Amino acid sequence: MERNLDFDIVVDRRNTKCLKYDFAKKRGMPEDVLPMWVADMDFRTSSYVEDAITEWAKHGIFGYSEVETPYFETVRDWMKEYHGWEPQEKWLVKTPGVVFALAMAVRAYTEPGDAVLIQQPVYYPFSEVIKDNGRKVVSNDLYLGEDYRYHIDFEDFEKKVKENRIRLFLLCSPHNPVGRVWTREELIRLGDICVKYGVTVVSDEIHHDFIFRGIHHVFVNLKKEYEEISVICTSPSKTFNLAGMMLSNIFIPNQMLRRKFRKERDRAGISQLGIMGLVAGEAAYSNGGEWYRAMMSYVRDNIEFTRQYVKEHLPGVAVVQQEATYLVWLDFRGLGLEAEELDQRIIHQAKLWLDSGKIFGISGRGFQRINVACPRSVLEEALQRLEKCV
Image (cartoon, rainbow, N blue to C red):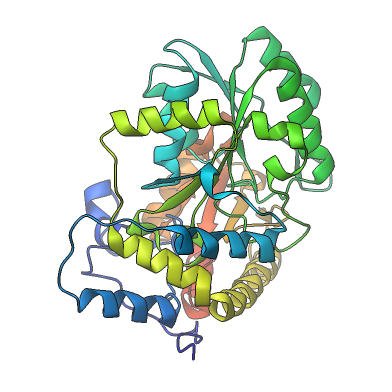
C-alpha cells in the first residue's frame, strides 16, 4: 500500500548533501535564501521505491550489477500505458542522465565546428553540451504569441537548417522552461523538415509525464520514417524525483545511430550503472502509479495557485500558459526592470533563488523559472517573498 501521499508534509532537506538547499553560499547566494530553482521535487518519492531500495541495501554487497528483460518490460509497460508507445528492447541504451546522453549525441553525430540547432529559451545544458564539445549553437528562437503560448517559427527553422548545414537538432518535448506541449501537427512539421535535410533529432522527453493540457506525442511514434532519425531521451528521474539515482533510458531505433551513440558512451568510460538507480527505476515504473497520479493532482493545484496569486498580488508579472512540467515560466517584463536588476531584487531582497531567464538564452531575459513541486506552504511563502520584492 502506498504510504507517501501527503504532499503537504515539509521534509527538511538541509544538511542532506542536497544541491538545492545546501550549496547556496557556494553558488553565491545568501545562506537564508529559499531555493525554488533546480528541477527536483520536495516530495518523498513512492514508498514502493523506498522499500525496494531498503530491501536491496540489506543484501550488503554492491558489486557490478546489470538488469535484464524484466527491467525493460516495466519501462515499456509504462510507456504503453501513459504514452501509447511500445519501444523495442534492442533500442534501449541506459545512461547516467539525459544531459550526459545529449553530450554523447553531440559527439556521436557531429564533428568539431559543426552547428547544432536548438530552440531558445531552452534548458541551458542544451547550449552547454554543444559549446563544451567545440560545436556551434544555432537557435530557432520560439516566440510568445498573443495567446500567451510559445510557438515555432517554421520558416526560420528550415532556413537555419539549410544555411547552417544542420545535421543535429536537440528538441525539448515537452518544452522546458516555456511549458509547451507540442501538438502532433507541430512535431510532424518539424520532423518532415528534418527528414528532408537528413537531420538527426534528439528528443529530450524527460518531462513527458507532466502533461496538464494537451497530449504528449513521442516524436519517434508519429511516423515510421522518424525511426531512422530519432534518439528519444527518457528517465524516471523527474517523474519520481530520482535525479540523484543517475538513470536514464535512451531509445534509438536506427542501428547505425545506436552504434555511434554506444561508441561515444563507451569512450566516456561508462559500462554498468549504479544498482540502486536500476532498482529504484524498476520499482517506480512497476508500482508507482498511485503515487504519480496523486502527485500530479497536487502539482496541478500548485500551478493554479501560482497563477491566481500572481494575477491578484503581482501587477506587472504574468504567468505564461502552463501546459506541462512543474516549472512555471514567469514574465517580469511588465515591471520595466533590466534582467540584472530583477535578479538582484529577487535574490537579495526577496531572498528567493529562482532560475534567471537569461541562462536559457537571450530570449529568456526578463523571465524567471520557478519550481512549484513543493508543499503548498513553501510555495505560498515564496510567492509572498516575491510580492514584497516587486
